[in-house]
Every structure is written in C-alpha cells, then in structure tokens.
Image (tube, rainbow over all chains, first blue to last red; front, side, top):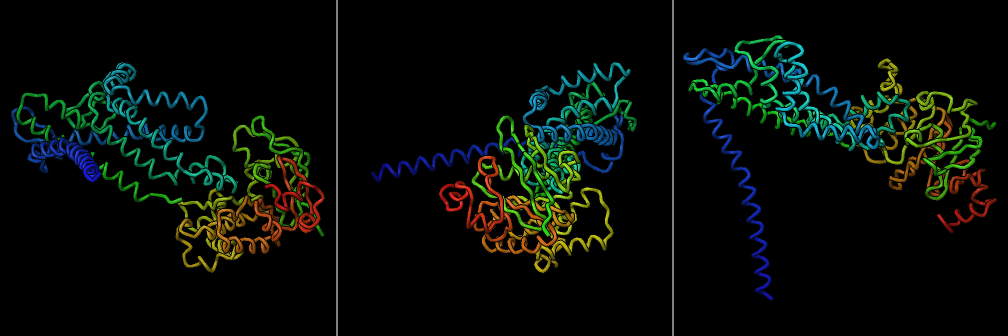
Length: 281
Length: 252
C-alpha cells in the first residue's frame, strides 16, 4: 500500500517535471532568435540608420529612412481602411448573431484568414496594380488591410458579445436611439477589447512582406506619394538579405531588429490597453 | 380624484407562435403604485415591457390590441419618444460602466443630444439623487464610477437615472430581487415617496412586497389578467380561486 502511494507520487512529480521542461523548451527558440537578431542588428543601429537613405553598393553606411517612412504610411493607410470596416462588421455580427448574412460573413472571415498573404498580394496586383498602371503604396495598404480585417472583426465581435445585454436595454429604455446606444454606450464599454484587436492586427501586418512585393514594390528613395511605389521595412529586409553585399546584410539585420522591437512594443501595448481601459460591469 | 394614465384594451402578445399575453384589459391609475404579480412565466414582465415597447428587441415578438398612454396609442408613436416618458428600471442594477455617477444621471440627456447648461445639469443630478435618497451617500463622490457603489445604491442610481428624464410612468421589473433586505426596504420607502410625482408599475415575485407598497394589484396567470383591484381587497378577499390559491401559497 505504502509503496503504491510513493509510486503514485513519483508519477506525479515525473509528470510535473515533464510539462515544466517542455514549457521551458518552448521559450528557448524565441530567446535564441531574439538574441541572434539583437547581436547582429544592434551594431547597425545608430543615428544615421534612422535618418539616411541607403547608400549605393560599395559605399559604407547609410540607413533605412525611406523604409521607416514607407512602413508608417502603408500601415497607417491599411488601418484607416480596415478599422472602420472591421469594427462595423464586428458590430453587425454581435448584434445579429443568428442571421443568414452573419453566417456567411463569419464563414468568409474564416476563409479570408486562411488565405496565404502572397495570394492576396497577387489578387490586389491583378485588381489594382495592373488596371491603374503601376505599383503604388495604396495598393499595398489595401492588401494589408485584407490581412488585418479578420483580427479586427473577430476581436470586435467577441468583445461586444461579452457586454451584458442589460446595458443596451438601460440605454434604449432611456429613449436613446439604437445607433447612439451602440456608439456611445456599447463601444466605449468594449473599447479595450476592440483596441487590443486593432493593435494585434497592426502587429500582424507590420512584418508582412509577400503581398507588398506585388503592390508597393519598394523604392530606393523616400516617397510620400501613396500612388507611387514606396519602400517598407519588410521589403528592405527581403531585398538586402538576399543581396550578395556584406554591408547590405548589416542593414537587413538592423531593420529586422527595429521590426522585432516594434512588434514587441505593440504586444506590450495590447496588454497595457487591456488593463487601462478594463471596464467593470 | 383618481384618473387613469394608462389603459390597455384586449391586448395580446406573442413570441413567435407562443402567445404570452391573452386579451389583457387594464386601467392604471395616476400617482399610484400598481403591483403586477403572478407565478413565473405568467407574462407579467412581458406586459410591462410591452408598455414601453422594450419587448420589440426580441426579434419575433408581435402584438395586437391597444395600449393607450394619455389617450395616445403607444404603438402609433415613436418608441424613442415613448421611452423618454415611460422610464424603466431592471432586475439587475445596470449603471453605465464607463460613466461616473454624475454622467449616469444625465445620460438620458447627453445620449439623446439634449444640451443642458452646467447649472441645469447640477440641478437635475442633485434633485434626482435627493429624490432617491442617495444624495447624502454619494455627494462627495459624484465623479467616481457608478459601478463602485453597492448593489442597492446602484439600483437607486438607476432609478435616479430614470426619473432624471422626468417621466410620467416608472416601470420597475423586479427591482429588488437581486438586493439584500435592507436595500430592498430602502427602495420600498423610496417608491412610497416617488408615487406622489410618478405613476409606478412594479413587477414583483414577492407577495409581501406587493402587499406593503402597492395601492392596486394585478394578478396574472399564464398570460391572462385574472384579477385586478385594490391591493387590500385582493389580499383579504380575492374573488377568484386562482388568486386565492396563489396568495395562500398553494402554487407559485
């Protein structure tokens, strides 16, 4: 009997040790990747890196100013397209969860989420780039907004579904019209969830490269014209890392480092948002 | 002099194909407390939700017959205007979680885009809180969130929010069922004061409560209005067997 119990205890400890070990293992690759990128990238980071354009092959130095500006513009435009559409769809789905349209909309969102981003890039190339006669930042933003949409729609729908119905009734019973109830009572109550969905969406698209290859294409100079090709950080990483020049590799590592820091920052921001605007019902 | 403020005539209501109210005709007296009671599923909540048309939020709800509010058919005017004149308080306290106590009280104005001066706002907030005897408890914390109050205080805040709109009728859907006895008795005292200015219709499960606070009582059973009259008469001398059985606790 006693033996039996000690054997059981042993099995218990063994199991606990295994899951702890495997959890620790999952952290290892991330830490290695971070370590490697920081080690390679940190040496490229200096003031010039942020304010200068890339130098021609053979010259040492230069920066990725054009790519940073390009990324900011392309991501900003993509958010401008995806946020209003995504939040509206999310509101519709949470309000009419059982309608036929909701069923097909949800199905489409799931499928959209599963479409490889390179395919979306090709589609946008065929629909926007070719008809309008050339690569442009705006077509890149459209491709990225399609990638961002599912995350915004799902987080909005899930957040709004968790808001008690009694809150909506309280507002309607005061004679507040439906649209104002949604905009002034329901959305503010679910603000943190919607915002964190948006931020995660931005984190998701900021590293997307494939769809930008066919759309915003890249540009060795700083461009502010959204109808013309524009550079961006993932594009510059792709182009420089595949080049044969040592100094360009260095810039690619630096750009990767910046990108990783940015995404890390967005993830932390999501957690803070959830805390700061948490609503107690 | 008793005058009626609300009248229903042969009123029926359905959810899908299930009829939940059958041929209800009732006349509600101004400045009195009318208790609506009956066993679960008898349609009492549906009845008061039909008065301010909140039942329409259920998508397959339909009605026939008339409800007249000051001789106007409530189904012929905009529900938005109707609900500003007929306030409602729910079973669970539901203050707006993103708003302060102050903002909660004037929410009916701000959300409806009715602009008030600072003095008018202060006035509405103070009066509504005084009427719900909440003023002394919260006057130093007006700009704190309403959700930090206790359940009973939250419910009084919700009543204050409703009366801030100066409604004629106040509908209460089991307002004390989620509260402790002390909070309950505070709300009951409050209703006694409020009926001087408003007509109150209260749904309650609790017979003692109906007996304590109401002037008239309506007894519903499976969607029908079985008996309606002075509370004293209903409790001491019910005319219908079902009413008597319910009151004496034989079912319910």
